[in-house]
Amino acid sequence: MANAAAAAHGKTLVAWNEDEIAEAFTRFEAQDPEPKGELNHTDAFTLLVAVVLSAQATDTGVNKATTGLFAAAATPAAMVTLGEEEVARHIRTLGLYRGKAKNVVELSRLLLERHAGVVPRDREALEALPGVGRKTANVVLNIAFGAPTIAVDTHLFRVANRTGLAPGPTPLAVELGLEARIPDRFKLHAHHWLILHGRYICKATKPECGRCIIADLCRWPEKRF
Image (cartoon, rainbow, N blue to C red):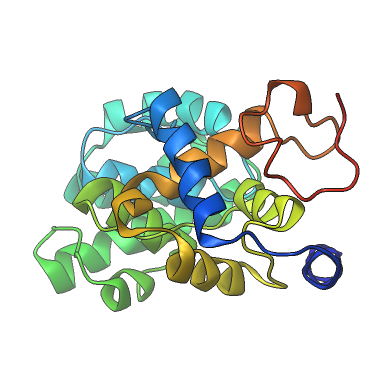
């Protein structure tokens, strides 16, 4: 469904030009110069775990689950010692919690085995860990290491296609489109601005177009005021 919708948008919407893209991100920057992700973490490892747990879950739900989990185990070694059953107990309020617990313990073990317990700054190494895909790697690289990566989640995918900012049939297509079109000076924070915009303004079922700071640039034919 998402791919079909994106393809349809890509055919009917005229993509933004360079001036419009620069104007949109200038507005995002003026409104929120230092946007932050909403997953609680203290370092690259706890960030990695939180992002892995966030699949098919809300940030609020993950933060509730990780409060106890990180109090019990905030390092790869401590997580391995805690074990799969105890990790599962801490995160049982999350969907797919048993599979996620297995991944968290195994990625912790592999961090110790392959990287001396340190989260790698390399995309390929990150994606070789259980439960870590491209989006998760992009989030960690961006937030933990300051890389100008763009993590395309459901919210960002919707905003990019609905507005005409960077229409694409898949998350990867949207990511590559954004990377090619967003001016370098905005790239570090770009995915935060777009995710937060999709989460709180350009919502899936009831977008608040009257509060949208880029409504005049948006190509969506069904804007609501």
